[in-house]
Length: 438
Image (cartoon, one colour):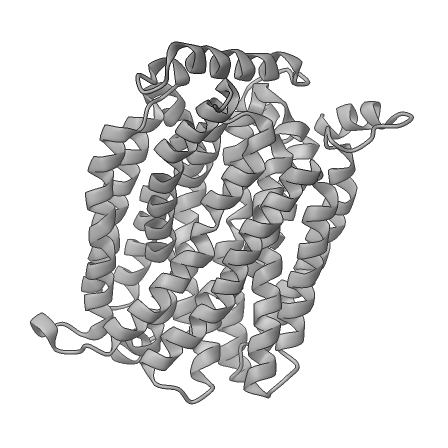
């Protein structure tokens, strides 16, 4: 018979994790399917690579300005209502992308879509801190974040097929793709509202001893965590630890979106059909998703974060940069698989680092600030790649710029990660951490 801890965690993960993974799959698909749409939409609407890169990146401007307010609203009204609201509005706006008619409408819809989705990812990460003890969080966050690559594993072939279906209901293939891939988020918004609960105290599906164990365990973790005094939003934003982690996340996310937005165009250069592009483009993301799950589980088992974030980031940088220097399609694809494995394996470990670096007092705001500032690379990366592609005719130069900043992110992580609570704190490291935190 399972003990109370095993029974409780099995119930919690089965109750929430599959649903939230599916939600994130749809969220990420609706965010990056514009990369597939560009294969035909840009020609139909006469978009240059710069226009496409700017429009793709403007999503993250709306995301940036509404991220922190969205996470604060989640704390006030509860995850159940707020996450359901996010999913409904982003579904509406994702479908609206099918009806853009030029540059201006493209830019407006992308900004609004970012504003609508703002708060979903850090809100779910914060939700996990309300329900999942720290020793399980690496695996749970890893399983949740595996939705990013697996969204592309599932979505790439689907998007490729939908793009080839011109004429259905009088729509272009890219228009059909935006509408079809937005519908699941509207359905899921209703399911989220019915299934999520805001705290373990509301878990009617746990027995009394299970609920008591979970509430006591999470409360004990909060008491033992290093407290960080909170002196208002602006003081939190300007703390060195927040800014350093945001700068590091900027580099991780840049590699991620460099792959997500431009992989279809890279694969298209292999002289494949739209459907074949969808299938081949799924391969690096499948590798990344499997790596994310395995690496997160390994990190949890060894109770180690620092090495587990630094090694995959190094692989991501090497794979992305290396892919720009080769011309043989199979070798280029192999290096892109290395990059995908690296960046998607590093992502959940990065987020598992944060509670031990920030402390609970600034978790809600800190998560959102790091995510929103870091996600500005989702604006910078496609815009830089688009401008350089228009100037040179190739994505290689832009991807090299992204890889170069990834090196900066790696150096930041090398310094900051040694202060994580699972790393040794000899000598005056505890005092250094206090100084870095600000």
